[in-house]
Amino acid sequence: MIMADSFGTYLKNERELRGASLNDIAHATRIPERHLEALEEDRYDDLPAEVFIKGYIRNYGEALGIDANELLTAYDERIGKGRREEREKSWKEVAHQEQKKTSIQTQLKLVAFLIGMGVVGWLVWASLNNPPSSDSQAVPVPMKTLPKGLKTVPAPEPGPAPSGGQAPPPGMGTESPGAEAPPGPEMNAETGQNKVPQLENGGIMNDLQDQTVPTNQRTVEPSPSDNERAFSLEIRAKEKAWFHMILDEERERDFTLNAGERIVLHANEQILADIGNRNGTEFLLNGKTYELPGTQNVVLNFVFKAELVE
Image 1: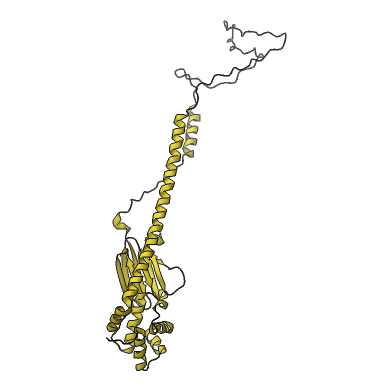
Image 2: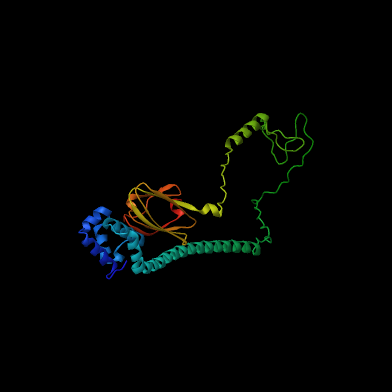
């Protein structure tokens, strides 16, 4: 295809030769009229991503009865190649920024871990090099001075028990007649410990059993393998839409979906996407419906990652 003028001027001349208006083309292709004007005036920076421009050119040619493949070849030779190089450079910058952001977060976590380990190490070192002192001496307790005129009387030594009774315990005074000492706990002759009545012992054990709290059980999930890191992006079109995708900075996909069509993409790290007619498209990330942020119908340089639905 030989073109003396610019690509946009060629499209305009072909349209006028067929007596079609911009409004006629917009109605037939469902492309906004302002985008058709930009296409005919070679204002490609005012248009959405490259994949949309190619979709516009294909639909424009079909509406005028021109071979769409010839139009796309002419566009790519004159304009598309240079714009594609600029676009790839922009995508690499976006991917580099994402990678840099992830690297910074990893470094911050590592620094926090090292600081925590340093503090723990310092505390251990301090405890080993500064043990508690064992040279402390007992502080003598001052004795109380008895009032003048009183003497210290030694405690009476135990003697034979008087007839009809037992000797009072050492240090105890004579109690009034008829008073009985309160019963104490029964002693075990073998161990020298107090015996607890069986009934009371059973009550104590029951109380302890009532206070026992069962521990919560936690199921530990296994760490995912490298193959399980892959995520899926399903795209369902309710209306015609254009897409340009870069999967893991390696695979590039350009495609168009008509109403009722769908596609499923898989990636390990991320999918960098240019999306046209997002309002007529439904996205499922790892099987979960995902709503893109913002309100623009044309979305450029959006990064899909598995973390968006976690």
